[in-house]
Length: 511
Image (cartoon, rainbow, N blue to C red; front, top):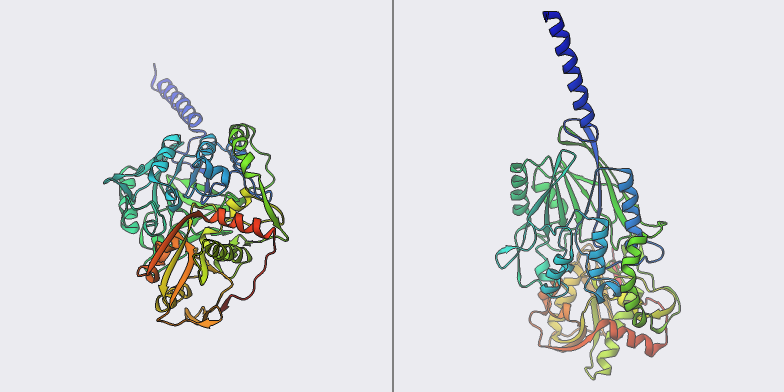
């Protein structure tokens, strides 16, 4: 064979192999530019059914399916708080939620603080039900990681490293977190970045249940984490229920979150070139107008049938809407709310029914979760408003500690779940700039340091959770009634027959 013929032969073979290599590479990222779709949720809170035609698990599944049908590269994740919400979820320990996530084929979730609203044994069962990993880098049980410390998903040649963080404050805000150890968030994240780089991750994504609200000095928000830890491409956040319309950028890290209760799914397009994130386009997609996924609807149906009979019992009537949300934000975390007044007044009423005469009632806004619509009120409606298994406690404290309590509340950042709703006996004026109490009366009288006051509240607050220990750690007496707040409000509505929303100036904010 001549040199010329040999050259032409080798050239033809080389072109053939190059063409075959190119064809094989179609659909794979490799060193070329490609796009991976990131879908994410957070703070789902037992939202099995749509509320006001918004959200719903089967509707969410329909959206997810529509995206996956159009895109071959999709990563679906959740940033925690699957638990605690609608009655159908609460009754079955969130098994319907986990099964819905299985149908949607979530790739990973992390723990939220509300995963510990029930005993740890419930969470361990949920982890067994799941076909997806719970990724947790900083939560330990019996000196071992509670979940999977990290995971790597290979999507068409791109190695996506995922780690998970849950706020250390969970030990303070969740009743059943005492058995667990929560490692420091920033140092853990730094370790995970280094570990994932050693594992040759091209992208690093953190599923973090931290939020945007700094509830106290030293609280690690997602913004703080991004500013102090290098090497994280994207933080998928939860906890503060924040609604954003565009991703936040802190340093080289993008931060995204998708409000709450499945109302939105965050959708981001990650553009990757040479294994590097070169661009990120993101938006919140409202789950509204989607025809429920038939497979998931059928799967959830038997849970609905079992729960329906009791939950549909009518207990009274609302003369008008008890609105709670405005622009996606829970208004009860920003000031006096009619629904908060209803709950607090119900606690005060029940304490009197039990001959535990209280001077006033107080409850945290973080425990009030849904609107109460005008018309007939069912048990299910009330359980959606008060989804947690909190019970009524009556606490005795000195006037000095009572003033300390309201001093703490004056310093709670607006938007935080610790912000309190109060019964009609209280009048308080907060100076938001000075973060102090300007006026406080109970039953029309100023508070006297040496007197003993009796407060009707919930066991969550009485136990000093959410920062309330600054005023309640030295309380004189606690009496636990074992009565669920939801049952108390149901009884109060039954007694009233019809309830009308109103505010009467019991909380004034000077801004």
